[in-house]
Length: 616
Image 1 (spheres, helix red, strand yellow):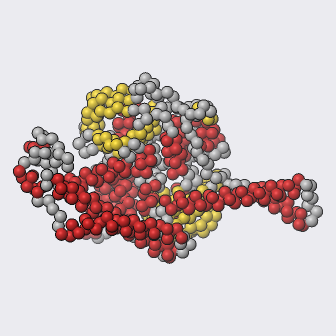
Image 2 (tube, helix red, strand yellow):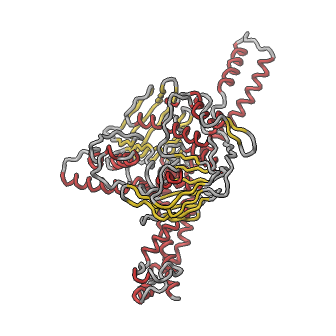
Image 3 (cartoon, helix red, strand yellow):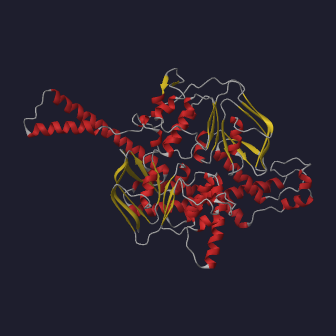
């Protein structure tokens, strides 16, 4: 069933056209990701499809009785209403029993999203807490179509994992804007790219989109090369003194002008940013026994860390644990309760906070950037002007002379980031840099960080971003401790899963012996006592587990082979919608099966190791 159909719709703001005569339809079962550079009109398109804004031209139609739930970037609320009442007012239920069940489900969803104070007033919440509350209000609605504008913003990694699982189980169609590339890879069965006023559809998830976009751009380059050859031939003919005396000659002159005006379009540019930055001495940042409490709660205590010149540190943990507070301590915005933060004398910190600084919105884009620097030096000794840096960060020459007040929220965040980089820092503190930035800007930022000569410390829930840039992880734990892990986010997540699996399988150490005995190879104190030794000796495979353990490697290999076959098949049937739906459904089922197999492999391998260790 087609839930919503848009035909030839257009929208402009003032003299700025957002999109022109685009068409799309969303059907039952679709899970579509919408991407594009900030300011291209993505959020506006969602509002039009949700019926909140009207297009300038074109036609919208909806299935009879179709219901749509919409998560906006800046949702409205009443300051005096409670969190729970705000969520429940999105559903209209009179039956007392059903209302009680819905209330219980609302509390469960809120808890998963990190909201525990159900009676808190909406006006007292932070912007991130309100966004998560609104997300809960949308998720609890029975809807044929969910439209979500940046649903992963302000969620920690655990909440993002939960949201992925929740959405995969829903029967509702889904249209979403998100910068989270792992999220898109897991959730989306189709992609839409809004690029310079045109909407490009792609079948498959984000990885498939990247492949198919590369093919589209290759074709576009080939078309441009052909156009240039034709233009050169026509230009030579024009220079020979053609006169429009006959219909044939006039048609040829018209053809020349059409070729000339067609232009190449705006192609994606290769980014080359290797800025020199200011010199960084041996001492960078030293954190000594730092403790910090807020609101009567200890966030972290006795934290020691020495930041090195080339460090790429990712900071993760649940919301409210103190990740942003740690960055503020390093930036000198807050002071520790105990301990000290020592900054090297050559350190120049660039601090990108979650709350963008107040901008003078009457300034033009280029004027705002030039307040930091007119130009900065590249690593090869050449100079890069403010205008060139703006182009690298996707601000066209025309946009550079636009007043800041005319920019979208995402464009302002991108501009704020560039302003910080233009000051040539040698240490970067990035607090949730991926929030409200489009994927293309994130790609530019990642390219910049590849060659950044100093240290980078970033708080982020974006797993792709952390995998891309981090070489170590600081994780905020439940006991007000901050743990250090070598590797990127995936390395950290794998270690955490193994630890949790082991803790769930093996008996915990008793308090009496754990304090005096050292750990053994498998994490159990070496001198645990007779009761625990007896418990460990009882570990063994059941008959079915033994057989499963012997076969599981082959089953994983077979599942991976089938997924590879499905990926290839999906790429071949992009025009056959029915077959595409069938294959993508099988792909999702196969992915779930593989995940289950890997979970079983982890459990069985840990059990096998524990059985071997108890023999010694």
